[in-house]
Image (cartoon, rainbow over all chains, first blue to last red; front, side, top):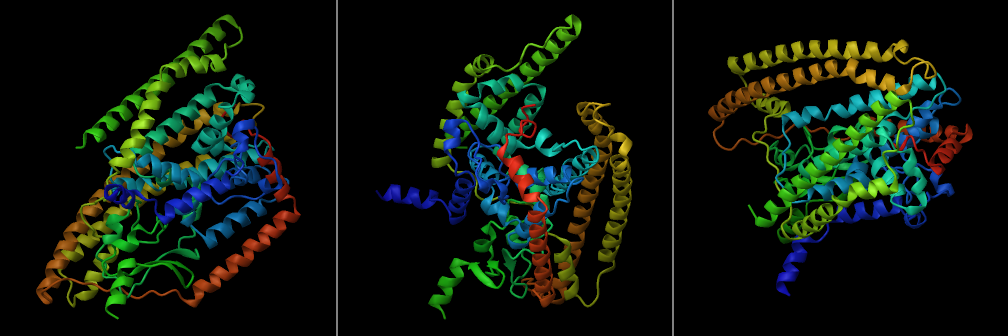
Length: 302
Length: 259
């Protein structure tokens, strides 16, 4: 019994993991879709969800913000992409990259894959530089290519079509795994093969590298990263208490230069690591999570 | 290393190799079929039918199942490594904080800083050239001709040929510059730390400048919030919401890579 308790204490899910699971379930609440082999067609589909979650997934109850953005750019000749841009602005302003760390279903999948006990590739200067690649992907595949073809009134969601692993995993594999969609097999060809190879590469990379897709490729993370300074929710450092020891940056598995920058997903791992107890998870001026040890100490020695 | 960890690692590598072999086989089959079609002018035999996929998965599914079970067991019992270390922490703000403590900056430290500036300038120039080249190519409308004349696949195949060299060159220069700067920063940190210890012996504790959230940030947040709400309302009234609904309630086979 004592052993079991010890195991449970060592392996029990953290608050963040529970929130991630709940958010993934909430964004994919139409589980019946996997049985029927059909996607959800209710009114909720007109609302963008914050994380990268393919809207062609049989369980998805909301629209993917990145897919919606590309399609809105593709349709910009008819009407400007105000709705999707406004939604992304709202998400970025309120949550920023907290979405990546706490709400994104693909982030959860990547973190679970990274738990497979194999040798890991640690972050270094090179992974830090590679993290700029996602901005190139954002510019080329999400903005420029859809824009050029929108002038010809030909919608090309280039990121979804050529890269997106969420579309292949949740959408394509999710739909193809149901017998009711056997006719879709006839459509598969080289495009699917290429995308499947990309998915396999990304999932494999995630076993060895922490959140490989988020860090190097995800354009949605790149968009939310632009709101790092203004986002309402996120980890904040008390600059007066900080001694610049760098324990937070060393313990962080993401390619951050400092806590709360554009690479920080606000997971809060650094909160308990900081020897000065200078880091807190805050929503504006409200503290959501502070250093627990500091509170105990404060309680003992007021 | 734990035996379960070794077993999981070996099985992971085996599964990855098998998956890669499967993908390679499909690609070879596709290109073989393409050549056969070109030769005979006949219809391409579909690569994926439920039967064909079943046959392909038949020999990989048990291995994948084993890997999944083992990974789950190992994940629950072994656990992933918890700490991730990077060798030295010597960022620009740490150096700036060290410099702020000194009344007289050693000449060697200044030399390192100017060397770093030169490296970054040179790297910046090369990256600007690469970015400029890519930008000119991407913003040239002739490179994205009408889809009725040039198939999209042809354009997408041309894209990496034209962009990858510049992208690789930019990242290579960035890697080299980062490595050089890192070494220079380490040298400068050592010089500055020695100077600080000389002036004030004991543990180096460096409080940084206080940058509190000021009112300007809240004003910016307010302005952005108003902008976001206005954009959403305008988007709803101009039909943007309906567009998202239509797109999201129909399976976009192109988006999910079906074709």
